[in-house]
Image (cartoon, rainbow, N blue to C red; front, side, top):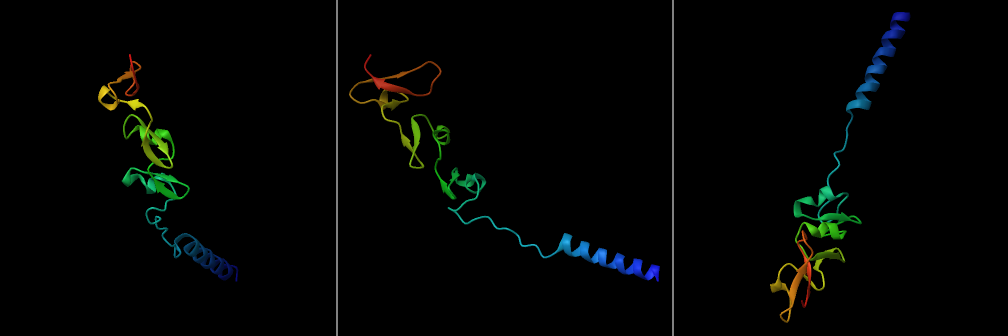
Length: 110
């Protein structure tokens, strides 16, 4: 009788483990673009996840990799006012004044 009880307990334990470990798991699908759960969902397009949607930027740091003189405004990278990379970026014959070691400066007269 003890052997039969032990056998029944063993069969139930194996059955429980099979159901809890293997079961019918649903595979979670990634959100459909432009929806996102993390920046990983947006990285293929070079974007970041902001409030559940892929956007060009969430902070100024996100724009820095796209070039100098850009800042994040309304989740898009926009040109900074009066910013320059060379004299050609400045109006009315102004010169681009950059601090040593910086990729950007400000337009002004010398």
